[in-house]
Length: 313
Image: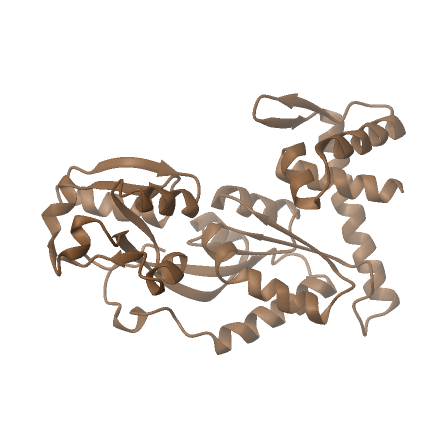
């Protein structure tokens, strides 16, 4: 169906990659390419061009994307209007998230939602903060969870605090520092650090350390928490991640959290985010209710009750 190919095109535009789209749909990249070719034949225009690191939409593709999002939103609204008492089969829910909530809070929320709404197609997208905020602004996701959203996001979109977590310094259990009970603040200057790339809470922690006069040794910057943990397992240095991202590793005693004398504790806060200028569709409204219910039953990670330090968000 033409509508199916349009929905596929919207997903490709979000991922900006045929390979990532295919992986998320559990099909081959060639299948995605063939269906997009059929869509281009339907309209008689070129919708995208391949680049070294993904795809780029043509002018025609950007026009189609804008109209397609409107059409899909209107279709959702029509379904709700025809039957306002239920979320009908065929409803779509697109959820976006930054890395921390996408690895900790949202998987269980989406799993719970799908059990009670088996007829709703859920798409889950994760990326850096700037991309997730852009998706919400452009209406490409219905609802998102973002850690430490930007000031413009807080000003322009609806934001609701849902969870908090502590930024931790940690090492492999066999690392020499793991045997020390207390480490001086200055020891960080001589210790290779393994961190996430991008401007987020970790970057603010590094800026805070530098403001104390420390010259930091950033040994590795990783695009994902898994990359940070993999480097720490190789004993390449001290990792910096949020507690819930290493909680299972700590429980298995693979990693040990370090305590630095004089180091302020830094907290990151996750927010539910959506466009406050548009009503949520039925599926998104019910998912929001689920997130709020989970929030009311959620207990903050270890040590949050002891937090007295810097809140960069």
